[in-house]
Length: 434
Image 1 (cartoon, rainbow, N blue to C red):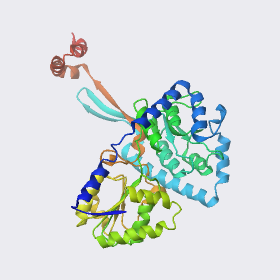
Image 2: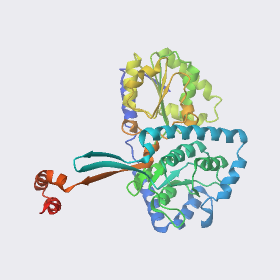
Image 3: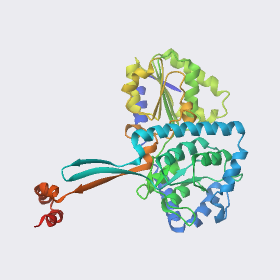
Image 4: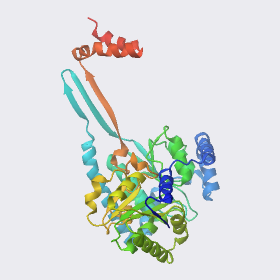
């Protein structure tokens, strides 16, 4: 990991690079993604089967695209009992957390009304009808992502949750299927990559069109989600994982090093950063990272990420560290020092904030109950973690009596004259004729 001191030329250059991390767009990749989406839109299942063979190396007949109910039930028997109980515990905590947020956001999904003389104004809240969740597959298996994506959708009242995940020669991970069953997923399809996003967005003979697509994926999946937005809604265009740790130098260096590696091991393009107050502590963490990497199964991926994009930034105090954290707007922010809670009011931009030395980012990924599908690439400046509110929509409700409409006749007339839309005024005037 590189080490930079505040005020040095390299420090500011690194920060500028981090701030611009989401601006790069691979136009060649997008062109390829667009062509696959178009094939799926036109040829439907035929394109799905073709690209599943090309990209996943799995040949499927059309009737095998969808996972059967029997396969889902069988998966529970194939998951080790202790891990199955862990999945149940995680599902319970995630469901409880999102039910609590539902109560504060959409009490009973009722509509609210405000009345004045002759006028009723209000809003009605309704859940989306059908949502698609994308669960990465390939070499890895992510049952945690299934729980995080599907449970808040069901808590919000979504009628049907469709899941797609890349197929493997040995079948879909039983833990992924068991998690889907626990979370209430209604249908599962053996489809991955761009073709899965296209199927969910456009619909095929086998896969129904959804209203919104949720879930992380590789850069091809991210590009596909960006391109189908407008045909359907999407949660976010996720980038590589990020962690920013702020330590006053009193956190055990082994804790900090482990947390940096925990995110660096995701992807060669992950962004692991430590902000601390002393060069000595920064060097201690750097040595500890190397020591832990020596026994890491994913040392190659983690080391590439740490060396390519990671950094240790030295600042004068915690106040300056918080300023930089807001500037970076990380996916995960660890305030790894005592009395961390007193700093939360000053944190404006982060996906999730982890308080104190005994709250590693990993607990948020799995067992805390909050959602781990978070904004990346600096988008925490304007977007939020996935939650119940992402699965509902609002509709305005308006009612005027004749007398109330008359009170605003002249105001409407002035607007329409200024904007040159006289037909709007005529629609009001027609209702006020004697």
